[in-house]
Image (tube, rainbow, N blue to C red; front, side, top):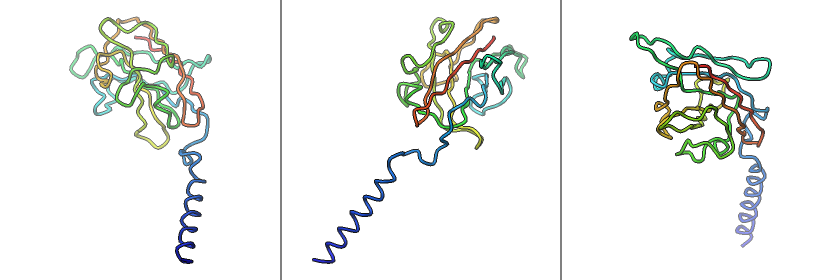
Length: 188
């Protein structure tokens, strides 16, 4: 009986120690405020291989804090006109996907999280897909914004008329509830 009591006490003590460490499930994560590391505009046809052909990158915001990408219309390797119409905002840390899209299987933006100007072209919808992975260790998650025909397929991103200025503003959150301000302009 004494052995059973000691064993039960040890299990209870171990359980209490285990629960004490469960207060923050993201303990090993970067606790800094989330910031934008870079903004990339990419041709959705080159997305599968993350081919940099047809991509444009902004490494810092302008003086007003707006991330601007320009030169998004180009000629591809086949000599055909193309457009980098998929906008990728890379953060310095992981974000909370639930603050970006309505579910892991639907890239519809969370209501009120982002504002898109202009409205999506006819037959398309604005989407915001969270991707918690990145190709480099100095990056966190990414938000892919696109006006497309498929809520789970960024390669469905549609082109914009040349001269169109797209503005995306809003807020995403990290796992500690800290806000990441998104303010991006893309000149097509």
